[in-house]
Amino acid sequence: MAKSKQIYVCSECGAEYTQWFGYCKECDSYGTISEEPIEQKNSGFSRGGWQSNTRSGGRADKTAKPRVSLKFSQINNDVQARFPSGYGELDRVLGGGIVPGALVLIGGDPGIGKSTLLLQVANQLSQRLSRILYVSAEESGQQVKLRASRLGVGVLPSEGETTNGNGSKKSKSAPKPEEKPDNDLYVLPETDLEEILRELESLKPQVAVIDSIQTLHFSSLTSAPGSVAQVRECTSALMQVGKRENITLLIVGHVTKEGAIAGPRVLEHLVDTVLYFEGDRYASHRLLRSVKNRFGATHEIGIFEMADKGLVEVDNPSELFLGNRDELAPGTATIVACEGTRPIVVELQALVSPTSYTSPRRSTTGVDYSRLQQILAVLEKRVGIPLSKLDAYVASAGGLGVGEPAADLGMAVAIVASFRDRIVDPRTVLIGEVGLGGQVRLVSQMELRLKEAAKLGFKRAIVPKGQSLPEDIGLEIIAIAKVIDAIIAAIPSERSGE
Image (spheres, rainbow, N blue to C red):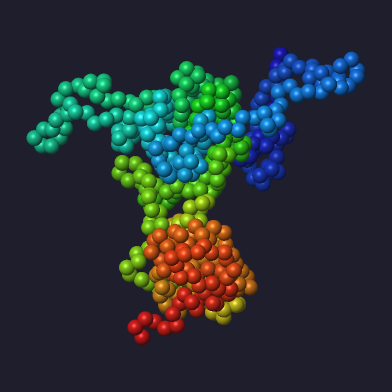
């Protein structure tokens, strides 16, 4: 008879302990360890099962040969064909398209648009592929259809409708089935993992959407849905079926209050790609960012805009993150940030004002707070600008998170321009990392940044001295070695018109 025992599992990282602790040693979390019952099953293998094959008759086997292992020369090196998702921004983040049989995990805050994005992607795929399955574990079939009708997904407009005299629609006749083709898009409202696995093996879709993994339930486990054991076992079972049947799985994952995907850390290790859907719920644009990708580059971003009919791709994101160039204001500077292999022109805005408090305030939006503190110290120590008793606020236009060091030079120039109440030339971009000694350091992907600036009509670029530059880029290049040289080159000595 199987013996039952208790183990203690951390809900954050999935670490297992034989006794309860109030503190997890693996992820440094408090109060996350809970008790879970397990069954110890007899594996059926004896002590010397596979080990008895290592020696034959008490003497070593001199004719060693592999059973199933292969050399690199024996492995097929054919490139696996990808297929487009119907959205170029998603294909960019995935590394060029969807890989057959891959597991893609998409996380994001509640209401950010994860289900909307995947329902639109499923609709686009169903128009070109044979079978697409949308598993809704959070909504009923009627709720999914209501949301799909708002997005124009799954059905075509019926021609059997007329309007009354007051403008309201009146059904003239029942539409025929062929007038509303579903384009091979199937919906399964189900939370039972075994039923979902049976449907996957029976339907054999090319792509399946699981919305969401935290709501699935495996009846063989006694823990509640969303627990460490449930998420781990459900993901493992889906991965086995997906790899065996060559089904691409797009899995939605909930996030914690810290922004990480809820559940054990092993969830992110099991899947092939991890994407985060980010954005301010009060803003219209959304960012899709890759943090893990076995088939492409990481930290790529795709940009969407939430419209009345769902998510729409943004063709030129640089224009989205550039402020109003008609009305210039003191304290603004333009940088070129790189997200993965994508250059984006962003406007940084700074405001320096006398403080009304004992200690001055520092605030950032879309910019790293510690980088602001560092640049303020460099400007006061190396340039001689008294900022220790002034409030300083820095923000990026559009709220794009700019965390790379190449934005340091633009941030420093914007702060000095606000302090002196000067206007930086709007046709100039600033690219460089500011060191603690006041020097400007080299940055990567300079050619991509300069080409993006030239494409948008900029005329000058202030870059670090010694940076390798392409020829005939169409920009006036000003190479500087110190941050004070960049301030002199970017900020006029007097106000225009004085």
